[in-house]
Amino acid sequence: ELKEEFTRVLTANNPHAPQNIVRYSFKERTYKPISHVDQMAIHFTLNGNLVPKDSDEGRRQCARLSITSEKAPVETSAIPSEEAEIKDEESRGDTQAAGKEEAEESGTAEAAEAAEEEESPAPRVKEQKLANQFNFIERASMTLSNPMQERACQTEPTPRKSLSAYANQWIIYDAYVEEIQKQEMSKEKEKTKAPIAKREAVKKKGRKPTSLESQSDDITKISKAAKIIERMVNQNTFDDIAQDFKYFEDASDEYRGQQGTLLPLWKFQYDKTKSLAVTAISWNPKYKDLFAVGYGSYDFTKQGQGMIVLYTMKNPSFPEYVFSSESGIMCLDFHNDHPHLMAVGFYDGNVAIYNLKKSTSQPSYRSSAKAGKHTEPVWQVKWQKDDMENNLNFFSVSSDGRIVSWTLVKNELVHTDVIKLSAEGTTMQWPEGLQLQMLGCGTSFDFHKKIDNLFLVGTEEGKIYKCSKSYSSQFLDVFEAHQMAVDSVSWNPYHLKVFISCSSDWTVKIWDHTIKTPMFVYDLRSAVGDVAWSPYSSTVFAAVTTDGK
Image (tube, rainbow, N blue to C red; front, side):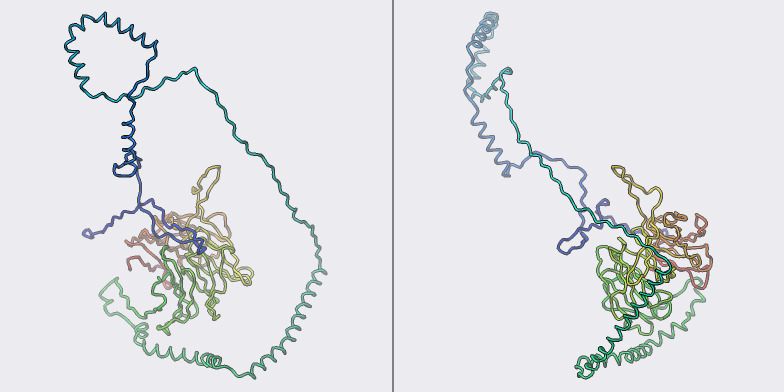
């Protein structure tokens, strides 16, 4: 282990560059992800004033400087008479005082003057005219003032009505009587419509069926027989695999100790799912050979269509059911009492219910933006017991921090926010006194096997929340479980106080929900993707890691 080499890759990516940027496309009317993000980081910027000589701006400046040098003034302004007289008097005094010195230095001065005269006279800059500070002019200007206008509008007041009603025993009785009469009237109308429908059916029988109709009828008649024959052929083809599944025993297990072996059996594949990743698997609780597989993508930039495929071990060559969706599948779960109902969570935050008894490929129930759908991917869904009114319901957890209960009422899904994953110390102060409550990102949950209201929620922050369905405003307890995201939590089926959790920080921990610290910690040296208890033993569990172990 000490000689094991670890490869490090240095990339020139900006760690502060924004990721997962989406922009609204008015053409397609949807948000589109921006795949390329500028990774350049500017640490210092200084604007210069130098211009290359070869550029157009440099040539214009050179031409401008040459013109100014040619037009330099040669004639000087005439000195006023008063100033000239003052200068003459000063020069006379200077000549009398320094007569002797000039006599001595006359030779050198004459030589210097002769040399200066030989040199070319330097261009003299035009002297700036002195302005008289007491000579000024006042000027004023006036701007136009914007005209003020007053506008007002008046709306009609909303109509109001006062309603009152009185209910007693006989009023309620009369209402029931009216309802019974309406039902009898509707039955009579249906009876009158039945003879008309029979007549139309007789007319259709008299008409000869077309070739397409006769072919479809023949196909439906032999479809069941063809399915049985197909399963018989597959069972004969994969008979050796079925025998290994039931009777295989590795003789080398006696010498390997704690190490086991895995024997690959059936291989299920579908051509239309080659470009998709397997994101969810769930076994049917009634039909033990049937299981569902969800296809999607965990990559934000590669989101597209998803697919649900149901396979059976009786026919490994082709799936039994295929459902396609507009968004990737993230999770799914079968109902224990109604095995034909399947709850599904999507990457775009929607949830849906598929009915295997119906021939349509569309879901029977589906959430929408108006019906309180999640704003982030749904990571897990779980069916629950029927509510007080015997309505089917299931729970969902998402990265938006909401635990939502979905109830099937008539022909729609009704949502109820059970709890929001907010914790103390996560409130942010904004200008003008505004407060923003930060929510945790839920990744997984599990409900207690005996206590119906008790459940656990794992988050991306590494925390595990112990919650109750009866309290939506507070948590029962919070466990500082892991350093990274909690990928899975699960209650022990035998010890009712014990649960297990796994995380991307390479650890698997076993907890007692009445104690803040873990009882056992296992370091698997790789990110743990999922963990599950054994159905036959209270002390055995299985875990899978990202390195394939």
